[in-house]
Image 1 (tube, each protein chain N blue to C red):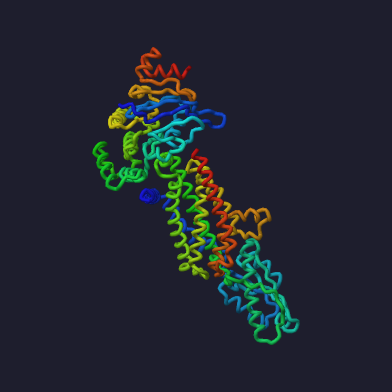
Image 2 (tube, rainbow over the protein chains, first blue to last red):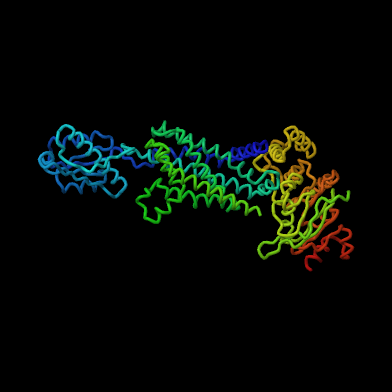
Length: 368
Length: 242
């Protein structure tokens, strides 16, 4: 045990003497979470829109007031003719036009339905999509309020209620993703680099000739990174709660346990990578290209898995991060417990055991 | 020098697929002896040594080191030997003192023993000025001397040196060999591989490996007589060229 503690102490010396690893360990998580939280967001704020109101009655006025009162939209201008629509878009400032049909309010009362056209500038498809979603949400909301006051509902509308993130806050979606990426980066990349560094420098050979058992060497290399990853996960959760007001609706204890499970999954990936690479450079390349890229692209962090072509959807199942993101979103946003997440947890656990087994086997072969 | 045998190899063989790296070598090393293990690059020296220090399993034959079998008792062997590899092997980003503490620690030395040993080394190698400096900042010759001392920290019965003097100047090499003699006088057996034929002259006995086989094994003096040449260099050339 004493040998082991000495080993871990040495590992911490390595980490704290190397400015690059220190930066990756502590600078990166904070920078990334701030970047994703503030800059790269699909939230919209004060988007300029124009209104073409053919009706000009009480109902349309109420809807316009509601839209204008929301912080998402600023009504920049009112236009009078259909022909003006293209003109305002061409100026570039206006991102959407609301076109109320003639006698909108009356149609709604007599016919039970009325139409409003939402025309968006789709040169930026993501924003266009978001704008149309937000506008729909506001219209829906108005409709609900209206139906509350009358006994008979005028209209049966398909409900597209937005659950869990009713304000559509982008950062809520990004926090679980960023947390996953960072834990992956710290655990898998840093361990694989640190193990292959010992190989590259020839110290691994010395360690293997010493009375330390190979397993002790590996565990000794991995334990410091478990600590650091747990600290990182804590920093991310605390930052998202206090800076971005992301709720943690579920149990913090479960969140901690699941995070530790994912950290171990990533560490075993890191060990596996290190058995395949003789130098730090190779370990870094394999981690970045073979691990980080698929994790970012296929885990559902940025691109929704449901909108991927089928083969990619199938491949996404072998990405551990996919399952962890589902778990994180479940615990943080939906507030569900293990009874809803046991399947994902089991998948992750299975992957971990498989990876540990595989790297143990590969490690042994390498010793021969 | 006694007649106690600390390394005994019998038909020790290592094959990788159809390639035979070490081909049934047999030899023995006496306690306190400086045993030179020579051979051209790729002759199988390092592979043979790896089997003796317990990180590679023999394909055939057997060997005992410090009385323990290399195939079945590798863990016991590891406690009784020191090893210094051809790649320089201290941690560059640790100070001299931290390196000594770390390696002392993994060989199971107590804190008091480590303290004592550190003080001894500082005295012996005149390290006072650099003991708290990072190893990476030291010249190669110093690193190698410290590395050798570190491999002797736990008073091993045998120390294995894999091309320990590669890349250092003749003066440092000379000092290094003085350290080797001192260790041997204290009863430590030294098993050393080298490329330098002048160093071969310093050994009590040398073996010369060619293509996985030991082609000659005797004291440098006897070998020179046997081949009728002036120095070890010529012995080596005669053997290596066939």
